[in-house]
Image 1: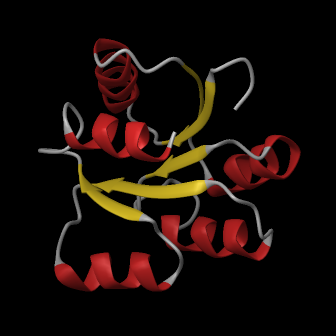
Image 2 (image 1 turned 90 degrees about the vertical axis):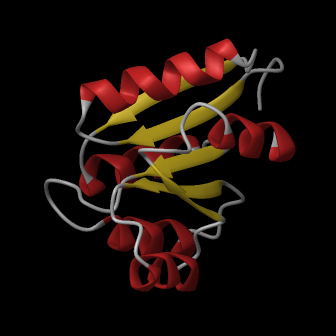
Image 3 (image 1 turned 30 degrees about the horizontal axis):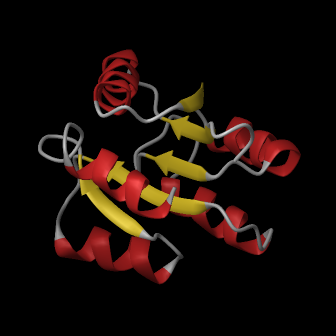
Length: 124
């Protein structure tokens, strides 16, 4: 965190979800620099150079699974909080995400406006 601004990497190919997340955080008064990428490859490159405070990723990405991204991030041993934000909310996906290092598992349909900002405030 630099200058009281959180650094957040949002990994999602949906411009609507990107808009929703940015809007939800701003509405809750969270000051953040939010960078977005759409692929695991781009996210891994970004992470290695910037080590953001938070990484928020979907599971279903154009090039690979968000699980692969979580594995890569955890290998780097960074201190970033890692949140999964997805429509795939069945227990098997949740368990897999937690197993591979997710700090939280959130539902795109229900958790963007309130739960995501609350989680970020609690850690940020």
